[in-house]
Image 1 (cartoon, rainbow, N blue to C red):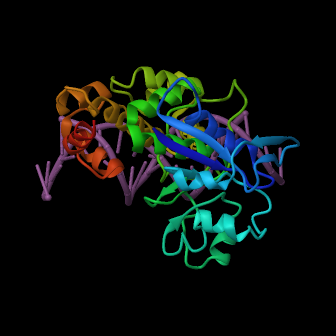
Image 2: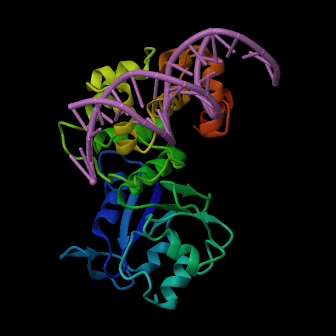
Length: 292
DNA sequence: GACGGCTCCCGCCACT
DNA sequence: AGAGTGGCGGGAGCCG
């Protein structure tokens, strides 16, 4: 079983750590073993007025398949050498791409010139090291990890369980205007859910706008404010996620997958698939078939 | 891959 | 005045 170990450093952001716990630590799926460790086992203060209990010391990091480092205050604090050694964190990002909360990207770039800071994405996957932006982007990153380890279907199942809207691609802009859409009446959430149910049908932006009760212009504006992307790009991303799930293990032809996902034709699916996944549908299916 | 035809979507601006 | 809205033009991008 794949072991994920979260490292709770003093004044950990409990919400960040909880995302990992919800995604990797739930008993419903038996894909991951999830442990929480700290430099010294025991109570670890959080930034939000309560402490959490870390049952393990950092020795468990050695046997981790994935190490999770949730946010903590103060990031300027000097960590003990033994913690840094365990993480091999010093210089680990040098020469790599990385991101962080949009308020801190400039600081990160200034303090660590060797890191190629990507200021406007949700998360960055550099293979061995993955980084994400502010809180909610951690969900996208964790689901991305599940997808990498076990496929889109597994990621979809967990996303459904924790009731988060379907994933967003890492390259998507961080939400600068409205981090969390509130205001139930004004939110386009229900229109997005409606669109997901009708993904297989041809959908136009005009239809989505009509469903939401806005003019096309206002709909487009509000859509970007809430999701950070445009209606069509969002549709394409959702259709591609759907296609990934169908390709893994399924027997449907690429043409049939395309139609079932709402792509008008197989070439259309191939084009968007290549851009988002950097692979072809057939190669993607083969990779998952061989892995299983 | 190339190429039409069409949709999308963003800046601009008028209107409330 | 200032914020929110929506129509329009046209370049970008999607689709067959």
